Length: 349
Image (cartoon, rainbow, N blue to C red; front, side, top):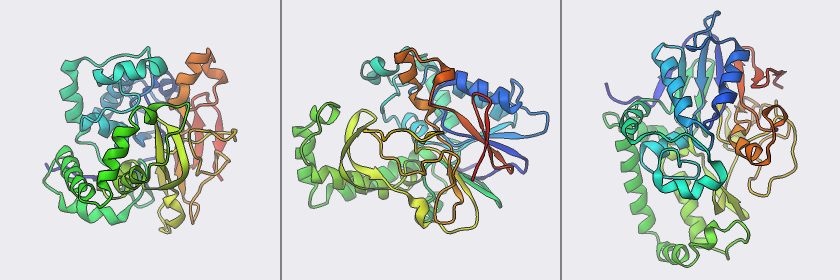
Protein backbone atom coordinates (compact mmCIF):
# COMPACT_ATOMS: atom_id res chain seq x y z
CA UNK A 1 0.00 0.00 0.00
CA UNK A 2 1.39 3.40 -0.98
CA UNK A 3 2.01 6.13 1.54
CA UNK A 4 -1.04 8.20 2.49
CA UNK A 5 -0.17 11.59 3.96
CA UNK A 6 -3.81 12.19 4.96
CA UNK A 7 -5.45 9.49 7.07
CA UNK A 8 -8.76 9.27 8.97
CA UNK A 9 -9.25 9.76 12.68
CA UNK A 10 -11.23 7.08 14.51
CA UNK A 11 -14.89 7.89 15.12
CA UNK A 12 -14.63 7.88 18.90
CA UNK A 13 -14.05 10.44 21.66
CA UNK A 14 -10.40 11.49 21.56
CA UNK A 15 -7.62 12.77 23.78
CA UNK A 16 -5.21 14.79 21.63
CA UNK A 17 -1.81 15.16 23.29
CA UNK A 18 0.75 17.90 22.63
CA UNK A 19 4.45 17.55 21.85
CA UNK A 20 5.98 15.01 24.27
CA UNK A 21 9.69 15.43 23.38
CA UNK A 22 10.90 12.32 25.16
CA UNK A 23 9.36 13.24 28.53
CA UNK A 24 8.16 9.75 29.42
CA UNK A 25 7.28 10.56 33.04
CA UNK A 26 5.04 13.46 32.03
CA UNK A 27 3.38 11.27 29.41
CA UNK A 28 2.66 8.45 31.84
CA UNK A 29 1.32 10.92 34.43
CA UNK A 30 -0.99 12.49 31.85
CA UNK A 31 -2.24 9.12 30.61
CA UNK A 32 -3.01 8.12 34.21
CA UNK A 33 -5.07 11.27 34.81
CA UNK A 34 -6.89 10.71 31.51
CA UNK A 35 -7.88 7.22 32.66
CA UNK A 36 -5.88 5.10 30.22
CA UNK A 37 -4.62 1.61 30.96
CA UNK A 38 -0.98 0.67 30.44
CA UNK A 39 -1.68 -0.63 26.90
CA UNK A 40 -3.34 2.63 25.86
CA UNK A 41 -6.88 1.30 26.06
CA UNK A 42 -9.59 3.30 27.83
CA UNK A 43 -12.64 1.96 29.71
CA UNK A 44 -14.86 4.40 27.80
CA UNK A 45 -13.44 3.54 24.40
CA UNK A 46 -11.52 6.82 23.97
CA UNK A 47 -8.48 6.95 21.68
CA UNK A 48 -5.18 8.84 21.96
CA UNK A 49 -3.88 11.12 19.21
CA UNK A 50 -0.48 12.80 19.26
CA UNK A 51 0.27 15.99 17.34
CA UNK A 52 3.88 14.92 16.62
CA UNK A 53 7.31 15.61 18.14
CA UNK A 54 7.25 12.56 20.37
CA UNK A 55 11.05 12.61 20.47
CA UNK A 56 14.19 14.73 21.07
CA UNK A 57 15.41 16.80 24.06
CA UNK A 58 13.81 14.73 26.82
CA UNK A 59 15.43 11.91 28.82
CA UNK A 60 13.85 8.90 27.09
CA UNK A 61 12.68 9.29 23.51
CA UNK A 62 13.01 5.51 22.88
CA UNK A 63 10.57 4.77 25.73
CA UNK A 64 8.03 7.29 24.40
CA UNK A 65 8.24 5.84 20.89
CA UNK A 66 8.10 2.26 22.18
CA UNK A 67 4.96 3.05 24.16
CA UNK A 68 3.35 4.78 21.22
CA UNK A 69 3.91 1.93 18.77
CA UNK A 70 2.68 -0.64 21.30
CA UNK A 71 -0.53 1.36 21.75
CA UNK A 72 -0.72 2.06 18.01
CA UNK A 73 -0.49 -1.65 17.16
CA UNK A 74 -3.37 -2.30 19.57
CA UNK A 75 -5.48 0.34 17.77
CA UNK A 76 -5.42 2.71 20.74
CA UNK A 77 -3.08 5.51 19.64
CA UNK A 78 -2.42 7.55 16.50
CA UNK A 79 0.00 10.31 15.56
CA UNK A 80 0.89 12.78 12.87
CA UNK A 81 4.56 13.31 12.17
CA UNK A 82 6.31 16.35 13.58
CA UNK A 83 9.50 17.93 12.34
CA UNK A 84 11.54 16.04 14.94
CA UNK A 85 10.39 12.61 13.71
CA UNK A 86 11.09 13.69 10.14
CA UNK A 87 14.61 14.73 11.08
CA UNK A 88 15.28 11.18 12.29
CA UNK A 89 13.53 9.66 9.29
CA UNK A 90 15.55 11.57 6.68
CA UNK A 91 18.84 11.54 8.65
CA UNK A 92 18.98 15.25 9.37
CA UNK A 93 20.62 15.72 12.81
CA UNK A 94 19.21 18.69 14.71
CA UNK A 95 19.19 20.14 18.22
CA UNK A 96 18.27 17.60 20.90
CA UNK A 97 18.63 14.49 18.74
CA UNK A 98 21.79 13.08 20.34
CA UNK A 99 19.76 10.04 21.50
CA UNK A 100 19.54 9.03 17.78
CA UNK A 101 22.50 10.71 16.05
CA UNK A 102 25.94 10.06 17.59
CA UNK A 103 27.32 13.15 15.83
CA UNK A 104 24.94 15.32 17.88
CA UNK A 105 25.74 13.84 21.26
CA UNK A 106 28.64 16.11 22.24
CA UNK A 107 26.79 19.23 21.07
CA UNK A 108 23.62 18.28 22.93
CA UNK A 109 24.99 16.60 26.06
CA UNK A 110 25.53 19.72 28.17
CA UNK A 111 21.93 20.81 27.77
CA UNK A 112 19.93 17.57 27.50
CA UNK A 113 21.94 14.63 28.89
CA UNK A 114 21.59 12.26 30.61
CA UNK A 115 19.30 10.51 28.21
CA UNK A 116 18.69 7.04 26.86
CA UNK A 117 20.44 6.26 23.57
CA UNK A 118 18.71 4.18 20.88
CA UNK A 119 20.97 1.27 19.82
CA UNK A 120 22.01 1.32 16.16
CA UNK A 121 20.40 -2.04 15.48
CA UNK A 122 16.97 -0.62 16.37
CA UNK A 123 17.12 2.39 14.07
CA UNK A 124 16.03 0.73 10.78
CA UNK A 125 12.84 -0.63 12.34
CA UNK A 126 12.01 2.74 13.91
CA UNK A 127 12.57 4.53 10.60
CA UNK A 128 10.36 2.01 8.80
CA UNK A 129 7.55 2.50 11.30
CA UNK A 130 7.76 6.28 11.30
CA UNK A 131 7.67 6.31 7.50
CA UNK A 132 4.08 5.00 7.56
CA UNK A 133 2.69 7.68 9.87
CA UNK A 134 0.61 10.47 8.28
CA UNK A 135 1.17 14.21 8.11
CA UNK A 136 -2.55 14.89 8.62
CA UNK A 137 -5.28 13.11 10.59
CA UNK A 138 -8.83 14.28 10.02
CA UNK A 139 -12.54 13.66 10.19
CA UNK A 140 -15.59 15.85 9.61
CA UNK A 141 -15.29 17.72 12.93
CA UNK A 142 -11.51 17.94 13.38
CA UNK A 143 -8.16 18.31 11.62
CA UNK A 144 -4.78 17.54 13.18
CA UNK A 145 -1.43 18.60 11.71
CA UNK A 146 1.83 19.27 13.50
CA UNK A 147 2.54 22.87 12.56
CA UNK A 148 0.51 24.42 9.75
CA UNK A 149 -2.53 23.79 7.57
CA UNK A 150 -1.24 24.70 4.10
CA UNK A 151 -3.69 23.68 1.35
CA UNK A 152 -1.42 25.05 -1.39
CA UNK A 153 0.97 22.08 -0.87
CA UNK A 154 -1.67 19.36 -1.14
CA UNK A 155 -1.47 19.10 -4.94
CA UNK A 156 2.26 18.34 -4.81
CA UNK A 157 1.71 15.73 -2.09
CA UNK A 158 -1.20 14.15 -3.99
CA UNK A 159 0.98 13.95 -7.11
CA UNK A 160 3.66 12.13 -5.09
CA UNK A 161 1.35 9.14 -4.56
CA UNK A 162 3.37 5.96 -5.04
CA UNK A 163 6.55 7.33 -3.50
CA UNK A 164 7.53 6.56 0.07
CA UNK A 165 7.60 9.46 2.50
CA UNK A 166 11.43 9.61 2.59
CA UNK A 167 11.49 9.53 -1.22
CA UNK A 168 9.02 12.39 -1.36
CA UNK A 169 10.95 14.38 1.21
CA UNK A 170 14.27 13.97 -0.59
CA UNK A 171 12.79 14.78 -4.01
CA UNK A 172 11.18 17.93 -2.65
CA UNK A 173 14.53 18.70 -1.02
CA UNK A 174 16.34 18.30 -4.35
CA UNK A 175 13.83 20.52 -6.15
CA UNK A 176 14.11 23.14 -3.42
CA UNK A 177 17.91 22.92 -3.43
CA UNK A 178 17.97 23.58 -7.18
CA UNK A 179 15.70 26.57 -6.71
CA UNK A 180 17.89 27.97 -3.95
CA UNK A 181 21.19 27.29 -5.67
CA UNK A 182 20.12 29.07 -8.84
CA UNK A 183 18.92 32.16 -6.96
CA UNK A 184 20.84 35.38 -7.57
CA UNK A 185 21.77 35.71 -3.87
CA UNK A 186 23.01 32.11 -3.36
CA UNK A 187 26.70 33.02 -3.61
CA UNK A 188 26.23 35.61 -0.87
CA UNK A 189 24.52 32.96 1.27
CA UNK A 190 27.51 30.59 0.95
CA UNK A 191 29.87 33.41 1.87
CA UNK A 192 27.83 34.30 4.97
CA UNK A 193 27.68 30.67 6.10
CA UNK A 194 31.43 30.23 5.80
CA UNK A 195 32.36 33.57 7.34
CA UNK A 196 30.01 33.40 10.33
CA UNK A 197 29.78 29.65 10.99
CA UNK A 198 31.02 29.91 14.59
CA UNK A 199 29.09 33.10 15.32
CA UNK A 200 25.83 31.42 14.27
CA UNK A 201 26.08 29.02 17.24
CA UNK A 202 27.30 31.51 19.84
CA UNK A 203 24.31 32.46 22.03
CA UNK A 204 26.16 35.33 23.70
CA UNK A 205 26.43 37.68 20.72
CA UNK A 206 24.29 38.02 17.58
CA UNK A 207 26.12 37.74 14.27
CA UNK A 208 26.21 40.68 11.86
CA UNK A 209 23.36 41.16 9.35
CA UNK A 210 23.06 38.14 7.03
CA UNK A 211 20.44 39.09 4.40
CA UNK A 212 21.15 36.18 2.07
CA UNK A 213 20.83 33.72 4.96
CA UNK A 214 17.50 35.28 5.85
CA UNK A 215 16.29 34.87 2.27
CA UNK A 216 17.50 31.27 2.22
CA UNK A 217 15.63 30.44 5.45
CA UNK A 218 12.47 32.15 4.19
CA UNK A 219 12.34 30.20 0.92
CA UNK A 220 13.30 26.96 2.63
CA UNK A 221 10.29 27.23 4.96
CA UNK A 222 7.79 27.99 2.23
CA UNK A 223 8.81 25.90 -0.79
CA UNK A 224 9.07 22.38 0.68
CA UNK A 225 5.57 20.82 0.93
CA UNK A 226 6.35 18.46 3.81
CA UNK A 227 8.26 21.02 5.84
CA UNK A 228 5.47 23.56 5.33
CA UNK A 229 3.10 21.22 7.21
CA UNK A 230 5.53 20.05 9.88
CA UNK A 231 7.59 23.19 10.57
CA UNK A 232 5.24 25.95 9.44
CA UNK A 233 5.89 28.89 7.17
CA UNK A 234 8.01 31.82 8.25
CA UNK A 235 8.67 35.50 7.64
CA UNK A 236 11.76 37.68 7.91
CA UNK A 237 12.33 38.43 11.60
CA UNK A 238 12.61 42.08 12.72
CA UNK A 239 15.93 41.14 14.33
CA UNK A 240 17.96 37.92 14.75
CA UNK A 241 17.08 35.69 17.70
CA UNK A 242 18.74 32.62 19.18
CA UNK A 243 16.70 29.39 19.29
CA UNK A 244 17.40 25.65 19.14
CA UNK A 245 21.14 26.07 19.09
CA UNK A 246 21.67 28.81 16.51
CA UNK A 247 20.83 32.35 15.50
CA UNK A 248 17.79 32.66 13.25
CA UNK A 249 16.79 35.36 10.80
CA UNK A 250 13.26 34.23 10.04
CA UNK A 251 10.43 33.84 12.56
CA UNK A 252 7.30 31.76 12.71
CA UNK A 253 4.13 33.50 11.57
CA UNK A 254 0.52 32.94 12.56
CA UNK A 255 -0.95 31.24 9.48
CA UNK A 256 -4.14 30.72 11.52
CA UNK A 257 -5.01 34.40 11.11
CA UNK A 258 -5.89 33.54 7.50
CA UNK A 259 -7.64 30.22 8.22
CA UNK A 260 -11.38 30.60 7.64
CA UNK A 261 -12.67 27.04 7.23
CA UNK A 262 -15.33 25.73 9.59
CA UNK A 263 -13.38 22.66 10.77
CA UNK A 264 -11.26 23.19 13.94
CA UNK A 265 -7.54 22.40 13.77
CA UNK A 266 -5.33 21.16 16.61
CA UNK A 267 -1.57 21.64 16.28
CA UNK A 268 1.66 21.48 18.29
CA UNK A 269 5.07 22.95 17.46
CA UNK A 270 4.58 26.52 18.74
CA UNK A 271 5.56 26.58 22.39
CA UNK A 272 3.05 28.18 24.70
CA UNK A 273 2.58 28.42 28.47
CA UNK A 274 -0.38 27.61 30.61
CA UNK A 275 -0.08 30.96 32.37
CA UNK A 276 1.44 34.17 30.97
CA UNK A 277 5.23 34.32 31.28
CA UNK A 278 7.79 37.10 30.78
CA UNK A 279 8.82 37.44 27.11
CA UNK A 280 11.47 34.92 26.11
CA UNK A 281 14.62 36.33 24.52
CA UNK A 282 15.00 33.24 22.33
CA UNK A 283 11.45 32.64 21.13
CA UNK A 284 8.83 34.97 19.70
CA UNK A 285 5.39 34.13 21.06
CA UNK A 286 2.74 34.47 18.36
CA UNK A 287 0.04 32.74 20.41
CA UNK A 288 -2.51 34.25 22.81
CA UNK A 289 -1.15 35.02 26.28
CA UNK A 290 -3.92 32.95 27.88
CA UNK A 291 -2.95 29.29 27.68
CA UNK A 292 -6.55 28.11 27.36
CA UNK A 293 -7.44 30.42 24.44
CA UNK A 294 -8.30 29.34 20.93
CA UNK A 295 -6.77 31.51 18.21
CA UNK A 296 -7.03 32.36 14.53
CA UNK A 297 -9.41 34.35 12.35
CA UNK A 298 -12.36 32.24 13.52
CA UNK A 299 -10.92 31.16 16.88
CA UNK A 300 -10.95 27.52 15.83
CA UNK A 301 -7.22 26.70 15.92
CA UNK A 302 -5.57 25.52 19.14
CA UNK A 303 -1.89 24.83 19.88
CA UNK A 304 -1.38 21.99 22.36
CA UNK A 305 2.38 22.35 22.86
CA UNK A 306 2.71 23.52 26.47
CA UNK A 307 6.53 23.46 26.38
CA UNK A 308 7.22 20.21 28.24
CA UNK A 309 10.22 19.93 25.90
CA UNK A 310 11.88 22.60 28.06
CA UNK A 311 11.88 20.49 31.21
CA UNK A 312 15.60 19.95 30.72
CA UNK A 313 15.84 23.42 32.25
CA UNK A 314 14.10 22.12 35.38
CA UNK A 315 16.58 19.28 35.66
CA UNK A 316 19.51 21.67 35.38
CA UNK A 317 18.04 23.91 38.09
CA UNK A 318 16.82 21.01 40.31
CA UNK A 319 13.22 22.20 39.95
CA UNK A 320 10.79 19.36 40.75
CA UNK A 321 8.11 18.49 38.21
CA UNK A 322 5.33 19.69 40.51
CA UNK A 323 6.80 23.21 40.40
CA UNK A 324 7.50 23.28 36.68
CA UNK A 325 6.03 25.94 34.40
CA UNK A 326 6.41 23.48 31.50
CA UNK A 327 3.55 21.05 30.96
CA UNK A 328 2.22 18.25 28.82
CA UNK A 329 -1.46 18.62 27.99
CA UNK A 330 -4.27 16.87 26.19
CA UNK A 331 -7.39 18.30 24.59
CA UNK A 332 -10.38 16.09 25.36
CA UNK A 333 -12.57 15.92 22.26
CA UNK A 334 -15.42 16.67 21.77
CA UNK A 335 -15.47 18.18 25.29
CA UNK A 336 -12.86 20.84 24.36
CA UNK A 337 -11.32 20.83 27.82
CA UNK A 338 -7.62 20.56 28.71
CA UNK A 339 -6.10 17.95 31.01
CA UNK A 340 -2.54 18.60 32.25
CA UNK A 341 0.08 16.13 33.42
CA UNK A 342 -0.42 17.30 37.03
CA UNK A 343 -4.09 16.26 36.83
CA UNK A 344 -5.56 19.74 36.60
CA UNK A 345 -8.41 20.39 34.17
CA UNK A 346 -9.21 23.65 32.42
CA UNK A 347 -11.92 24.72 29.98
CA UNK A 348 -10.87 26.32 26.73
CA UNK A 349 -12.25 29.68 25.65
